[in-house]
Length: 124
Image (cartoon, rainbow, N blue to C red; front, side, top):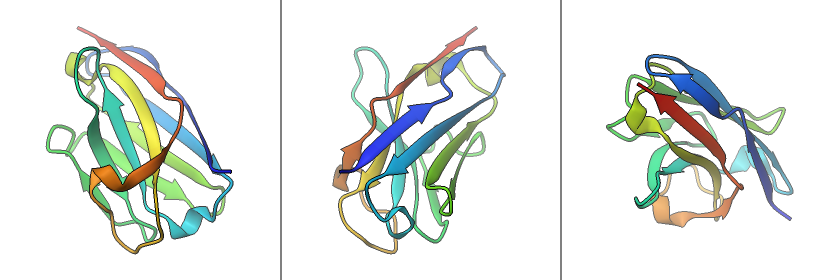
């Protein structure tokens, strides 16, 4: 079965950096688009960005220029490099897998497989 396990979260001061890692198993990872999402307390989950199977990316406006998504298809690993972190980036971060094979990043609602999340806390 599909399994996604995030790690790398933690507490950091504003302006700092973190790298989140998502280990994927149970499916043909290199064929699927992958996404990062986040949910802050009292807020709805929002898409951070996506990477398609060829490495094409899409980012939310709020993280453009600060966050970078990458993937290692040989190791079945998804990364989220977060730089210049702000207090408003504080949230639980989740990786997710597309529900079907496609060559592009789908709309957020089509991600159907989810990890358990990793907490990121940014203090001012």
